[in-house]
Amino acid sequence: MRRKFRWDKKYLHWGVTAFCVIACAILFFMALTYIPVIGEALGKFFRILSPFVWGLVLTYLLAPLMKKLERKVLLPLARRLFKKNKKNSGERLARALSVLVSEIVLLAILTLLVYLIIPELYNSIEKIVSNIVLNGDSYINTVSTWVDKRLADNPVIEEYVSTALKNFNEGLVDWLQTTVLPGMANIVSSVAGGLYVFLRGLYNLVVGIIVSAYILGNLEKVGAGFKRLIYCIFTVEAADKIYEGIRFADKTFMGFISGKLLDSAIIGLICYIFCAITGMPSALLVSVIVGVTNIIPFFGPLIGAVPSALIILLYPAPVKCLIFIIFIIVLQQVDGNFIGPKILGNSTGVSGFWVLFSIILGAGLFGFWGMLLGVPVFVVIYTLINSLISRKLKRSDLPVETEDYLDIERIDPVTREIVRSPADDRGIAAGPGTGQE
Image (tube, rainbow, N blue to C red):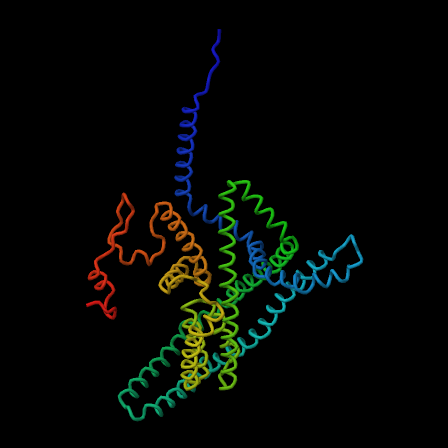
């Protein structure tokens, strides 16, 4: 009589575990071996899907505007229009109109920026090239004359600055003759490459707008499908925590981005008013540069001030350049101490050290976008880690707040009682100005 084979669940479990470990080790080895190929494949994959990424970004930015238009204006209007129609409450019409108006606002803003910036950029480049390339000697002579007048009472400094200007002029001429003129043949290929990038970006924008319009029109269904997927993969408790974290991340990102955009728009407008009143050259271009770079926390003012000051200096306008630098310093102080805190509030919730750390790390890993989004990303990660630490401390019956650990010498591992540091030690640790002697 044949005996029926019985599976031993314990050995089956170990066998499946061993197989998974070996398979993961093989996949990890192959990933290390073919990192360049995998990176190229992922890059190509993301390039193909870049229009959809643009669509998701546009959806995220336009969703608040679309919801407000629908809830405050278009939906009440549609309900009045379809008041007598029991089959149609006007919700679809309100949603379609709100999506359409949101997309029109986006296109209007982009068109306005292009219409204002491109002509100003062209005129500024033409003027700068005319001053330096075509009238380089005249430009240097103008700056030299201004330096001679300002430093007439300091002959040593005047001689040093004049020598530096002379060397700069000779180096500029040599650079034009040895580098710029021989490289004119590459202009055609550079223009072709720039045209391809422009067309690619235009294609991504057009498809992204179409994708964003579709998602905005079905926003609730898309959100419901995402929730359904989360609850399918994870347990109910884990899914609730994940969705809570997503809501917090959305609140952090939207608050930071909307606040910085409004703050930067105000700073750019103030800068333009000042530049227009004082007659600064390329007032619109300079104000746009200052406003856009102000979106970047901490380093934004410096990044925007340097090219703007150089544009003013190359006209040439050294006195106005100095006035502009002083104005930017004052403006950024006002923004950092009054305008920014009023708009953003305590949106980050982390210290200045961690803000600086997140910007440097983000810039090193992802460049401009890392500098721009490094702070809200770090805030989300910081909050998640802090939440996990607090939860662990609560389970261990330990103090949660950081301030509770300022004067702790040790905690009894059995009774969990806190042993405080002696008063003298606390006075020394507190430092001068605490009244401890």
